[in-house]
Every structure is written in structure tokens, then in C-alpha cells.
Amino acid sequence: MKTVWLVLASPYDYDPAMWRSRDLAQALSAQLRVVFFIEKNAASNIMQELGEMEWLGPSSLRSLQNCMLEGYRALADDVLDRVRRKVTQVEVVLEGVVEEVSLADYVTRLLPKEETQTIVVSGSKPLDLEVSEGIEKIEWFEG
Figure 1 (cartoon, rainbow, N blue to C red):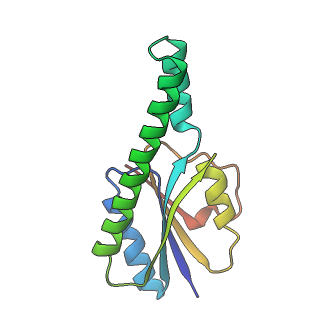
Figure 2 (cartoon, helix red, strand yellow):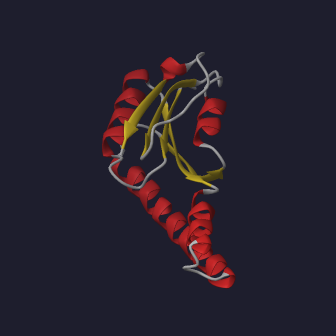
């Protein structure tokens, strides 16, 4: 089955990407697969910087990092639920929350899949891909 991917890497201003992926899925008679991507090291990098500035001690660093990730996962679940409720014109498959080191690596793994028609990515920073084959399948929305 043809597939359009919607990869959300930010919980803000993702509506343009959501509507674009819906429109593509409709036009291609494709399934819309939706994933919320969390960069694994993002929270730990921020916490490490706060620790180095001596704003937080070791135990408060771990506690705050865990709380931040829990909150972000809950926010991601809310975003996915909103997409499911809003996009009703096509078959939507929620893939859930993916926590990996690199958004670019994740998207690169989706490219060669035979059923992948388009990957619509919404994020807060540009996607730095080191591939040329299949790059035409990716649409980027900064949110």
C-alpha cells in the first residue's frame, strides 16, 4: 500500500505539514502514517549545560531530565491524538512516539521503503540529510 509519512519533530505550528500530508495521502490514495520524533539526547544536552553552569546538582539533573521527558512524551501523545481527530479523510495510522538519536537518520531509513511516496517533516530546525537519492520524496515544514 502506498504510504505518506508525517514526521512531527516539534509540537508547535505543525498544522501546515499535517494538512499537506493529508492532501498528499488523498491525492495518492495512500495511507497516512504519523510519528512524533523525540531526539534522545536533546534533554540530556540541556541538562548537562545547566549542570556545567552549576545551576543544578547531579540528583536534581536526573530528576528534572526525567520530568521533562515525561512531559514531552505526554505532549507528543496529545499532538498525535489531535492529528487523528483532525485528519479524517484518509486512513491514519499512528506510529506513536519514536525516541532516537537523529531525526536525519530516522528519515533516511524511511526513504528506501518501497511503499513510501512522500515524507512530510515538521520541525523547529532544518533537517540535515546526507543523502541525494530519494531526497525528492521529502517535504520540510519549519514549525
